[in-house]
Image 1: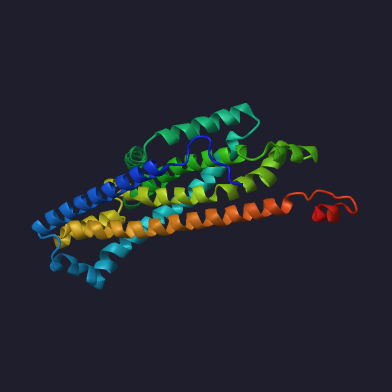
Image 2 (image 1 turned 180 degrees about the horizontal axis):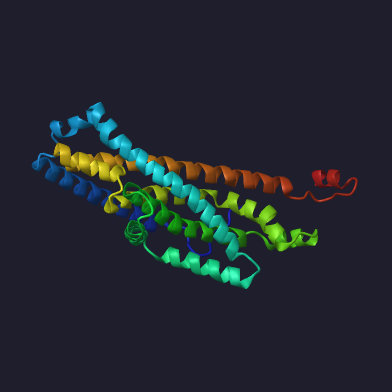
Length: 295
């Protein structure tokens, strides 16, 4: 039997009609805005064939878009790896039974979650440049990767903490009952289960990392958005260049989002299957099963 939510009632016929009308109005407004934008672009000769011809040439992709895409993916991959490590370390630290460790990890996580990514990028860009410890060409990449690591690692740390707290308390109690310490329970029982449960949210956070890497264009990091702007300036087709750049981001992010949804459905089906297999079958006395079938 399906259990209905106690917070929301199912919409009735009148509410469904209103929802349909609101959706139709929203679609019409969106189409009107799109038509207006296309008309304005056409009036400024931004939709002519010569503005889009550079994207049919191999040099455009080899000299601008593909190098920018590789720089974006480089920063995103490094930030994904380091943010996962950061999140696991500080997430486990927030679960420690030692109060000083919990306090320090909580302060670090909450601080970097509160600071905007762009502000951290600019601060690190200026700070690392003034230290003069790395080549100037590498400073933007270090600033982008570090800022993405600090912010997204803090979010992942919170995911780890909330994932462990969402587990049934019987998991820890059973581990303690068989002689494990609290840290062993976290390391061998609770953290692995929390990681499986948070995989869809983790993949969604990877999408955020990829999108936020475009902020590196402000601190002169030569990534996809920066290369798209350079291409638009060189070819005199800024609007088509930005549209193609946005389309590349949309395709990559859509692929990651679809992967997250598929993974969420797969994990949900596996969890449901395991729960069904683990549900105990009532013990019947001899002859009780046949009597139940006759009734």
